[in-house]
Length: 103
Picture 1: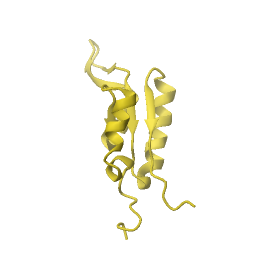
Picture 2: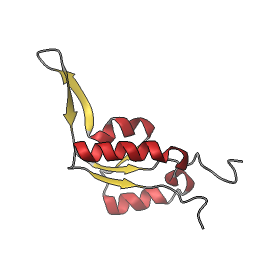
Picture 3: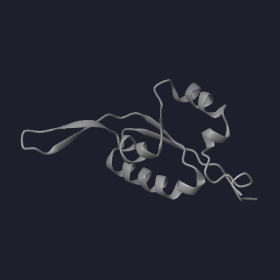
Picture 4: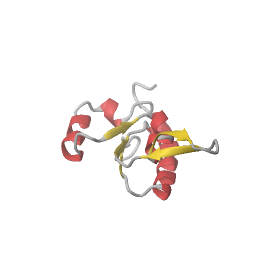
């Protein structure tokens, strides 16, 4: 069934020309997020270290991110994007989702 309705493929996996085109107008420093990156790098976290009291402190680095979830996981990615935009507003986010099952 997934051959007819590819709910498991992201827009970048479906169209190979999309990533080079995005790099052309977003710049070479754009970061393409995978599912693990939605929960960390998408929130501008880039590692971190423990402070003198033993608390973990994130290192924050703003960037331009491309979120390209498959349609089956779009609701999770969109919720993380909403949280990331509320916490850190310096980054630029581009969200790509294929349109399936629409007229």
